[in-house]
Length: 178
Image (cartoon, rainbow, N blue to C red; front, side, top):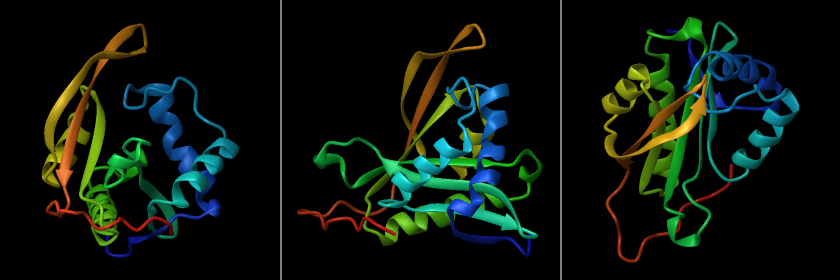
Protein backbone atom coordinates (compact mmCIF):
# COMPACT_ATOMS: atom_id res chain seq x y z
CA UNK A 1 0.00 0.00 0.00
CA UNK A 2 3.03 2.28 0.30
CA UNK A 3 3.05 3.17 -3.38
CA UNK A 4 -0.71 3.81 -3.59
CA UNK A 5 -1.52 7.16 -5.17
CA UNK A 6 -4.86 8.98 -4.92
CA UNK A 7 -5.53 11.46 -7.72
CA UNK A 8 -8.28 13.00 -9.80
CA UNK A 9 -9.68 10.53 -12.31
CA UNK A 10 -9.28 11.20 -16.01
CA UNK A 11 -10.93 9.81 -19.11
CA UNK A 12 -7.83 7.63 -19.57
CA UNK A 13 -8.96 5.74 -16.43
CA UNK A 14 -12.32 4.77 -17.92
CA UNK A 15 -11.31 1.25 -19.11
CA UNK A 16 -10.07 0.39 -15.60
CA UNK A 17 -13.09 1.99 -13.93
CA UNK A 18 -15.51 0.13 -16.21
CA UNK A 19 -13.66 -3.15 -15.53
CA UNK A 20 -13.85 -2.59 -11.76
CA UNK A 21 -17.57 -1.78 -11.88
CA UNK A 22 -18.76 -4.52 -14.26
CA UNK A 23 -18.54 -7.47 -11.80
CA UNK A 24 -20.53 -5.52 -9.21
CA UNK A 25 -23.29 -5.09 -11.78
CA UNK A 26 -23.17 -8.63 -13.22
CA UNK A 27 -22.60 -10.67 -10.08
CA UNK A 28 -23.87 -8.80 -7.01
CA UNK A 29 -26.68 -6.72 -5.57
CA UNK A 30 -24.17 -4.00 -4.65
CA UNK A 31 -25.23 -2.15 -7.79
CA UNK A 32 -28.86 -2.18 -8.83
CA UNK A 33 -27.89 -1.73 -12.48
CA UNK A 34 -28.69 -4.83 -14.48
CA UNK A 35 -26.16 -4.53 -17.32
CA UNK A 36 -22.63 -3.13 -17.04
CA UNK A 37 -22.46 0.27 -18.73
CA UNK A 38 -20.20 0.67 -21.73
CA UNK A 39 -16.96 2.63 -21.52
CA UNK A 40 -18.66 5.37 -23.53
CA UNK A 41 -21.44 5.59 -20.97
CA UNK A 42 -18.98 5.54 -18.07
CA UNK A 43 -17.05 8.40 -19.70
CA UNK A 44 -20.27 10.39 -20.14
CA UNK A 45 -21.09 9.88 -16.47
CA UNK A 46 -17.59 10.86 -15.35
CA UNK A 47 -17.62 14.06 -17.38
CA UNK A 48 -20.94 15.09 -15.87
CA UNK A 49 -19.87 14.33 -12.31
CA UNK A 50 -16.31 15.68 -12.46
CA UNK A 51 -17.53 19.02 -13.81
CA UNK A 52 -19.03 19.75 -10.37
CA UNK A 53 -17.79 17.19 -7.82
CA UNK A 54 -14.63 15.26 -6.96
CA UNK A 55 -14.02 12.02 -8.85
CA UNK A 56 -10.94 10.20 -7.57
CA UNK A 57 -9.01 7.02 -8.29
CA UNK A 58 -6.48 5.12 -6.25
CA UNK A 59 -3.71 3.45 -8.16
CA UNK A 60 -1.12 1.02 -6.95
CA UNK A 61 1.83 -0.01 -9.04
CA UNK A 62 0.48 2.16 -11.86
CA UNK A 63 -2.88 0.31 -11.96
CA UNK A 64 -6.21 1.81 -10.93
CA UNK A 65 -7.48 -0.23 -7.98
CA UNK A 66 -10.61 1.73 -7.15
CA UNK A 67 -12.59 4.89 -7.68
CA UNK A 68 -14.81 7.15 -5.63
CA UNK A 69 -16.88 10.18 -6.43
CA UNK A 70 -19.56 12.47 -5.09
CA UNK A 71 -22.64 13.74 -6.80
CA UNK A 72 -25.79 15.67 -6.12
CA UNK A 73 -27.89 14.40 -3.24
CA UNK A 74 -30.88 16.02 -4.93
CA UNK A 75 -31.13 18.51 -7.78
CA UNK A 76 -33.21 21.03 -5.83
CA UNK A 77 -31.16 24.08 -4.79
CA UNK A 78 -31.85 23.80 -1.06
CA UNK A 79 -29.96 20.49 -0.98
CA UNK A 80 -26.74 21.80 -2.58
CA UNK A 81 -24.67 21.46 0.63
CA UNK A 82 -25.21 17.68 0.73
CA UNK A 83 -23.65 15.08 -1.57
CA UNK A 84 -24.19 11.43 -2.33
CA UNK A 85 -20.97 9.41 -2.39
CA UNK A 86 -19.93 6.26 -4.23
CA UNK A 87 -16.90 3.96 -4.01
CA UNK A 88 -15.88 0.77 -5.82
CA UNK A 89 -12.70 -1.27 -5.47
CA UNK A 90 -11.18 -3.94 -7.67
CA UNK A 91 -11.81 -7.33 -6.12
CA UNK A 92 -8.06 -7.84 -5.69
CA UNK A 93 -7.74 -4.55 -3.78
CA UNK A 94 -10.16 -5.39 -0.99
CA UNK A 95 -9.04 -5.81 2.60
CA UNK A 96 -5.83 -3.78 2.33
CA UNK A 97 -7.03 -0.35 3.46
CA UNK A 98 -7.15 1.14 -0.02
CA UNK A 99 -10.89 1.78 0.14
CA UNK A 100 -10.63 3.54 3.46
CA UNK A 101 -7.81 5.78 2.19
CA UNK A 102 -9.67 6.58 -1.02
CA UNK A 103 -12.97 7.32 0.70
CA UNK A 104 -11.26 9.45 3.37
CA UNK A 105 -9.61 11.49 0.60
CA UNK A 106 -12.99 12.00 -1.07
CA UNK A 107 -14.53 13.16 2.22
CA UNK A 108 -11.60 15.54 2.85
CA UNK A 109 -12.09 17.01 -0.62
CA UNK A 110 -15.80 17.54 0.08
CA UNK A 111 -15.01 19.26 3.38
CA UNK A 112 -12.54 21.57 1.65
CA UNK A 113 -15.21 22.50 -0.89
CA UNK A 114 -17.63 23.52 1.86
CA UNK A 115 -20.14 20.67 1.76
CA UNK A 116 -21.93 19.98 5.05
CA UNK A 117 -22.88 16.32 4.71
CA UNK A 118 -22.24 13.20 2.67
CA UNK A 119 -24.75 10.43 2.18
CA UNK A 120 -24.31 6.89 1.01
CA UNK A 121 -26.92 4.45 -0.19
CA UNK A 122 -25.97 0.83 0.35
CA UNK A 123 -27.88 -2.15 -0.99
CA UNK A 124 -28.37 -4.67 1.80
CA UNK A 125 -26.93 -7.00 2.85
CA UNK A 126 -23.47 -5.58 2.21
CA UNK A 127 -21.33 -5.93 5.35
CA UNK A 128 -18.12 -4.68 3.68
CA UNK A 129 -19.64 -1.38 2.60
CA UNK A 130 -21.58 -0.93 5.84
CA UNK A 131 -18.34 -1.52 7.77
CA UNK A 132 -16.39 0.98 5.68
CA UNK A 133 -19.02 3.66 6.11
CA UNK A 134 -19.22 3.08 9.86
CA UNK A 135 -15.41 3.19 10.25
CA UNK A 136 -15.44 6.59 8.56
CA UNK A 137 -18.15 7.92 10.89
CA UNK A 138 -21.32 7.48 8.83
CA UNK A 139 -24.47 6.57 10.73
CA UNK A 140 -27.66 4.91 9.56
CA UNK A 141 -30.36 7.50 9.00
CA UNK A 142 -32.93 5.33 7.27
CA UNK A 143 -33.73 2.54 4.88
CA UNK A 144 -35.74 1.95 1.76
CA UNK A 145 -37.35 -1.49 1.95
CA UNK A 146 -37.55 -3.81 -1.02
CA UNK A 147 -36.74 -1.12 -3.59
CA UNK A 148 -34.38 -3.06 -5.89
CA UNK A 149 -35.45 -6.09 -7.95
CA UNK A 150 -32.43 -8.13 -9.00
CA UNK A 151 -31.64 -11.85 -9.22
CA UNK A 152 -35.33 -12.68 -8.77
CA UNK A 153 -35.62 -11.04 -5.36
CA UNK A 154 -36.38 -7.70 -3.71
CA UNK A 155 -33.53 -5.97 -1.89
CA UNK A 156 -33.35 -3.19 0.69
CA UNK A 157 -31.21 -0.08 0.63
CA UNK A 158 -29.68 1.45 3.75
CA UNK A 159 -29.20 5.21 3.90
CA UNK A 160 -26.10 6.49 5.72
CA UNK A 161 -25.01 10.05 6.51
CA UNK A 162 -21.85 11.75 7.70
CA UNK A 163 -21.80 15.37 8.81
CA UNK A 164 -18.75 17.01 7.27
CA UNK A 165 -19.01 20.44 8.92
CA UNK A 166 -21.18 22.32 11.37
CA UNK A 167 -24.20 24.00 9.84
CA UNK A 168 -23.65 27.73 9.43
CA UNK A 169 -26.51 30.22 9.32
CA UNK A 170 -26.53 31.39 6.62
CA UNK A 171 -24.38 28.70 4.95
CA UNK A 172 -21.41 29.50 2.72
CA UNK A 173 -21.87 28.36 -0.84
CA UNK A 174 -20.09 25.08 -1.59
CA UNK A 175 -17.40 25.18 -4.27
CA UNK A 176 -18.39 23.27 -7.38
CA UNK A 177 -16.06 22.42 -10.24
CA UNK A 178 -12.71 20.70 -10.56
